[in-house]
Image (cartoon, one colour):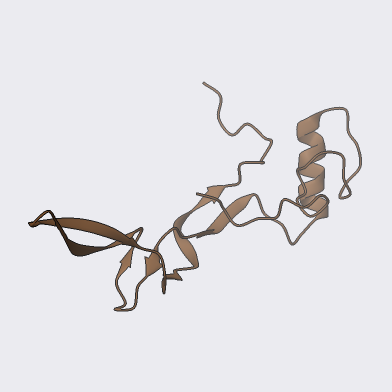
Length: 111
């Protein structure tokens, strides 16, 4: 599941040698300097894009199927047909607990 954030260069304070801070001898010092220099960014992720969809009835699920009856050689057979039309994505969902962004360069805990 992807988190909310930008992959474009220069907007994320921890990515590569872009704008946002002075170059330091240590990579962690450089990252902390960039974090302090950029007040609008945070290493935490508060929302994510949901993988669930609403159907026409308002039900929420990952996939929707419809049971159809097929008659072949005089025999009735039930099949499930996947519904892919008229589905509305749930959109952005707020996380219960903030997560740390995958590009965060500082080691939090070392065992």
